[in-house]
Amino acid sequence: MSVPELTVELNNRNLEPVQRRLPNLNRAPFEIRALKSGFLTAITWIVALLASVPLLSVIYMLIMQGGARLDWEALTALPPSAFEQGGGFGNAIIGTLVMVGLATVISVPIGILAAIYLAILDPDSKLAHSVRFLAKALTGFPSILAGVFVYAVLVVTMKTYSALAGGVALAVLMLPTVVLAAEQAMMMVPKKMKDAAFGMGCTRAQVILKVVLPTGAPGILTGIMLAIAGAAGNSAPLLFTALFSGYYLTSLTEPTASLAILIFNFSGMPYDNQLELAWAASLVLVLVVLVFNILARIIGRQKY
Amino acid sequence: MNATPEMSAAGVASANAPTGNIVMDCQIDKVFYGDFLAVRASTVPIEKNKITGFIGPSGCGKSTVLRSLNRMNDLIPIFRFEGKVTYHGQDIYDKKVDPVVVRRYIGMVFQQPNPFAMSIYDNVAFGLRLNGFKGDMDERVEKALKGAACWNEVKDKLKNSGLSLSGGQQQRLCIARAIATEPDVLLMDEPCSALDPIATRRVEELMLELKEKYTIALVTHNMQQATRVADTTAFFGVDISQGSRTGYLVEMGPTQQIFENPREKLTGEYVRGEFS
Image (cartoon, rainbow over the protein chains, first blue to last red):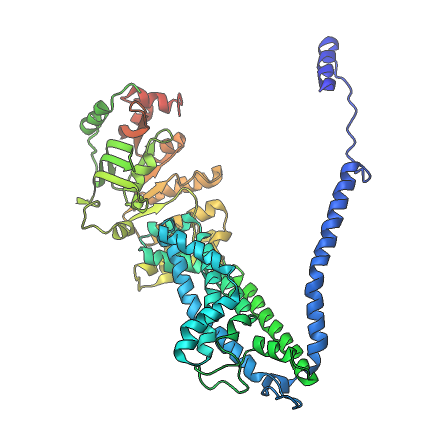
């Protein structure tokens, strides 16, 4: 502050410009500020690397241990019995896909319709607030409880473990994710776009179908894909609902194999063949989840 | 606030009998948002093939009045309208009237350019598809884009996103979208406020072309814009005497008269820029 003041005084007295030293604009890498900044940058780098270590090592281990048995037989054959050699987990792949498909067919329409209510129709109503609260609470819901719940509701009444019960249990887990992701995606559609649609003479249903859903679609689909990926890898809800089966699925009302339960069963067995298959099945499960994640990213890309 | 509103309203009714063909006659008694009286006794006739400009300080209710003309305010749950707005003699606030249908005849261009997240072509075709248009879509889209003076800029990229255009182009795209269905009246709510001077000039030139076919009501913050494009100008004021801010029509007349020879002292003060 003092220098400019001085400059002004001199100027007034002498009526001639005062020379001021130009500031140094060069980098000073060993200044305290620069050192601190460099140090913090380095820490975040290291921590980011550390965070990726568990993930990469899991994938490395799965490829090393499971890759060897991952062949056509493993993908198509039925699980071996205790001392049998060879075999595979084709029925578990089909079972997982069928149950995840069922869960998707159940949870997506319900989730999207609920999200339309939450995001557009009546976002501030008491019902909306409680549904939103419940959905958030359910995202942290222990997945085994979904299994117990569906056991009580479906398995006991139908008197059989089934793919249907497994699908419903997975749907219970997927629902909150789908609701919240779809709500978020629809809320992100700018109000001015909805106004434009109303201004064109759209009814409320037309605003939702022609503007809000298409505009929010990438976000909604991303949410659905993530929910599917989560459900595909979940074993707890299937323990009491789908149980397991050594055979290919022939009806939705019989016990059904799944990758997650096969891994759970085989990894506890004292036979090398079963252990190897558990590794291979784990690798397949990770690949399935990966495929859904990549799909989510591709679909989630904004078109316009 | 020298003029009493009763005097103004009476003055308008007698001294400003419009000469042309009235497309819409807006006779507001009271407009409320909840308990808040936003606009009171104002009569605003909109003449065919003319641009009617709404000017006035912030909070004077000019946008509220404009949005009452196609029932856009109905989207605000606490909005309540007392009075009537006749469109070719029919009261659009009549219980039998469907606001959705009203908006198909009385189009709107908003303050912020708001194209849909779809291609330029689909943006313009949106209203036509909505109305079940069966004819030559390409031709109508081209016609609307030409009418909105943006055909040359977008004709080679009709499949690109409407959101990829510049702000001025987006606004002209929105105008194209609004005129594609050939509405009768076009309501424009400060359509240039988000645009730079060059884009503003283009939209103003466009408005002058559009009034040959359409009837336009224009809210503007910019008094120069009103003098450049409006045939008739309505000046709204804010009355703070009752403790809250209530808008009302101070006076309305040919634009030149409003700016050069206003009847009300308040109008003169406003157009000379003595308050805003």
